[in-house]
Image (tube, rainbow, N blue to C red; front, side, top):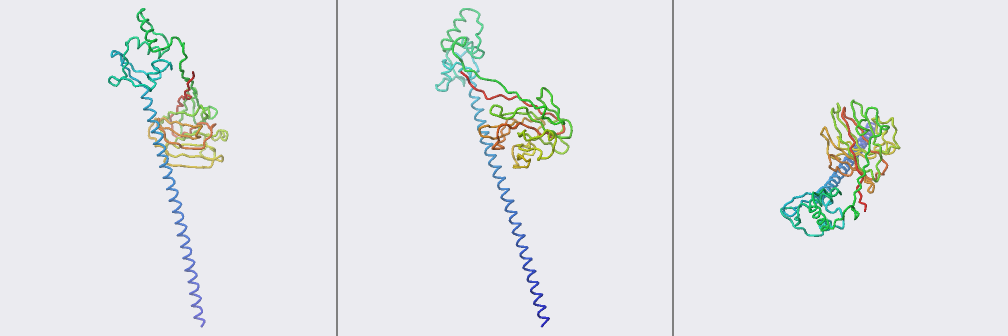
Length: 357
């Protein structure tokens, strides 16, 4: 009887061990399945984000191509009287908004063409003097009274006033020329040429800020990056915008993200965008942003949209897509340079042009 009870106890123990083992196996299988599901969802989201970004890049580049086409349409070739061929711009021809030329080239009227040139049935010499006047605002030099009479007659024909009798459309071309900020430049970097060029020579990286924050008027800045000697491991360049009020100057040579709070960076050579919160924690990382750089000389630019509150980047004139949303004005353009030796030149930027009457 005792032998039978021992056998029963042994069977019970074996049964419990088997159930426990199976439960553990099921638990581990469920855990692995959940991990695979999470990994799949993450990869699926990253692929979805990449596709959406590529769609946006296509849309923006389409807009850019359309703009370039429109700009090319504003270059106008003229055939004047069959004797003079002139190339000018629509803006020159429409300088005086109430003139006959402005009406003719307003886009509302049909024009005659001769071998892809707009044909104007007028005497070539006085008409060319009119175009010169429209370009420079200065009266042309005439050699005799006859030429003077023909010029005045041509001006009267096109109803173009002399000496600003009618106010013309003027273009404001004031430029905001930014510079790097010497007070916010890592000691591993050297500023030159009125703080427009920063040079690097050595293995240690360095961070630098521009002197003016992004706002409604200053919303685009371009850099020319020249690499003489790549880094011994791999070159990096982080370009973006940072809330400088949350930053400390001693962090200009730090290698930790926690020392770069409230930042929006594009890791150019790794095609990755990185955002940090006010504590320096990475709040978002997206791979496969933009096209990688292999050139020794590259033009990179940051574009801030104060209305949409977005931050975008350009490489050699081509938009790489919207990188960040919900970006407020007041952030400073910034660079974190990780190549061995080379330079970054800050190129001039212009305010949006506006018309005054």
